[in-house]
Amino acid sequence: MLRTHTCGELRGEHIGQEVTLSGWVQTIRDKGGLIWIDVRDRYGITQLMLEGDTDASLLETARELGREFVIKATGKVVERTSKNPNIPTGDVEVKLTALSILNGAQTPPFKIEDETDGGDDLRMKYRYLDIRRNPVRQKLELRAQVAREIRNYLSDLQFVEVETPVLIKSTPEGARDFLVPSRMNPGQFYALPQSPQTFKQLLMVAGMDRYFQIVKCFRDEDLRADRQPEFTQIDCEMSFVEREDILQTFEGLTKHLFKTVRGVDLPDFPRMEYADAMKYYGNDKPDTRFEMKFVELNDVAQNKGFNVFDSAEIVLAICAEGCVSYTRKELDGLTDWVKRPQIGAKGLVYVKCNEDGSFKSSVDKFYSQEDLKEWADKCGAKAGDLLLVLSGDLDHTRKAMSELRLEMGSRLGLRDRNKFSPLWVLNFPLLEKDEETGHYHAMHHPFTSCVAEDRDKLVSAPAEARANAYDMVINGVEVGGGSIRIHDKEEQSQMFDALGFSKEEAQKQFGFLMDAFQYGAPPHGGVAFGFDRLCALFGGVDSIRDFIAFPKNTSGRDMMIDSPSVIDNDQLKDLSIKLDVKA
Image: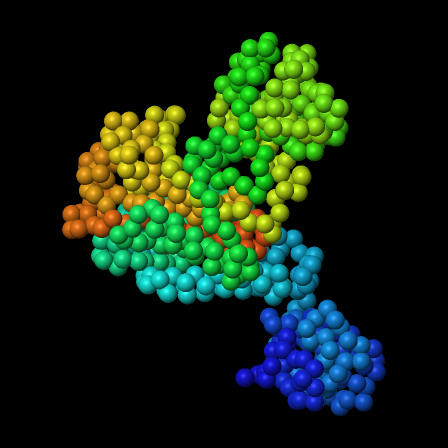
């Protein structure tokens, strides 16, 4: 070993000991008679010290150093005369007796410090330098801790970790696949898995009973803060279970992770119907750290001569507590905010619930004080509150109000990153209809079963069937989801029929699964967690990129290795691929 201790290890009890440290030079301070060198590794920083009467060759070596040089330093631990309470090693320093340069370094393109001067693109290009910084390193260590706790918890419950293939078959469901050409089978392609879904079901048919895997998955889709082209899932499946068994098992896992990783004791997770999530929050992953539920005002706001409301499918309000003091400028700013293309509302109506019991609104021309009081009563508003109202088509208005609710929650400081509000959302629609093509698509995937009471609807009224599916939502983020699977060949055939597959197409795409069902498939179900999202939640940030060692940017590029890149023509020829690139 080139060190006896790490750079974060030395304390007062080591005074008098001779030690050897190795690491990177953080800073050098040369005062002529004294030289101080801060040496850093992933465990911390220790100050090294050289006095003016030190051996000349040692001083010469010290004065050759630059930032990020890799060094080996030997000396005696002494008490610092000027202690640094900001670092754990701040009571001591090492008085050097030997110093060697293990490797030199160019001046880095940005500061290797907690608060750096490097922009996102620059730090991604030099990601190996960025990882030396404490905030990035700590996120990767947190990720490793979460993975370790997951493996320990599930292994104790008799789950078996099984690796599934990475080169698989492309399927038409879900997002776009990343495709891999096969040299040995010209004109044919593998796909990289979006999920190990069919393999984990086959493992249940195989009798593995309880499976898990922390697995890479791939989706060729547009990127944002919480998406990457390659991401990691905690993928799990269980046999001989019902929905409640799944919920209890993985609620237990989540509580364990929050306790061990964050020191937080979560309460039992409430359950919410999908229909209620949409009615009261406008989306299927509601942030329940704060209330501000939607209130429908159709019965008290329509047929009063205000055509905007009278012609609307839905009139929705939220109550922003204590916001009566909002100025006209602030209200106009909110109106402009909801009119942005990303939100798409045509306008915003407000009602101020004044402290004296009167009301002031942007539609006073159409509504009396009595009318506005009805609105306030229905919303549970009190003096000092502000009502914000949107109207229009049902789906569009719910979506816009959902965004407005979250924005108000942020502005009012109600979305505390250190507060965690988990829940299960249940009973999603089994299918959703593509308005352009008229075809149905599986809301989750085509292997999800109906709730028992809707089983007959799969054939008679597929649009009304509810899925035996569940999502775990924490602070408005879907961290995981799953379902009880179809394990009967006939029911799976009916599902494919509802999705518009011909018998031939179903056999071609999923015949291997249908065939397996003929050999005794047990009732089974499972869940998959977004591992990167879960880590970001623990770390208190929005972007999953911070928790991935070598992430892609928003264009799907790896700035460090410059990927994707052009392939050599000889390689393309081996793959029987000819590119038709037009200028």
